[in-house]
Length: 120
Image 1 (tube, rainbow, N blue to C red):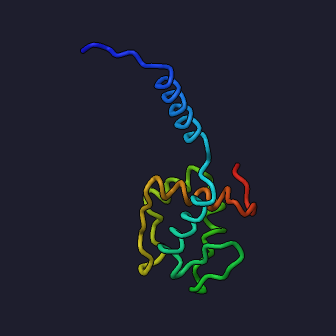
Image 2 (image 1 turned 45 degrees about the vertical axis):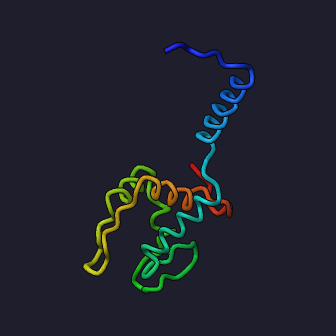
Image 3 (image 1 turned 180 degrees about the vertical axis):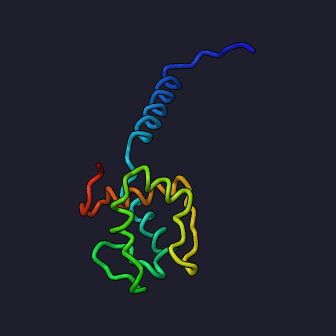
């Protein structure tokens, strides 16, 4: 197959596209990821646990997940969310989160746009 030459315009477009890919891979997910992490916790755990700092849990005995998960070291949080936090009692389901979900939850807990916690 004969290689075709790329004009100046085509070369500039490729460079622009490459720069966008590089920039996108360097940027931390913003408020959308924070909101998604909150929503993931609310939808999967909010029936019993509070997921916002300072709020009381709907189930009195259930700890606030913002406090509990926010105190985990990074490696443990990643492992616990990916493998499924073990049930502490028989009524608690074991939920496993995807890598994308784990990332969204991490940013909600450690680097949210509301400034309440900063990324380490």
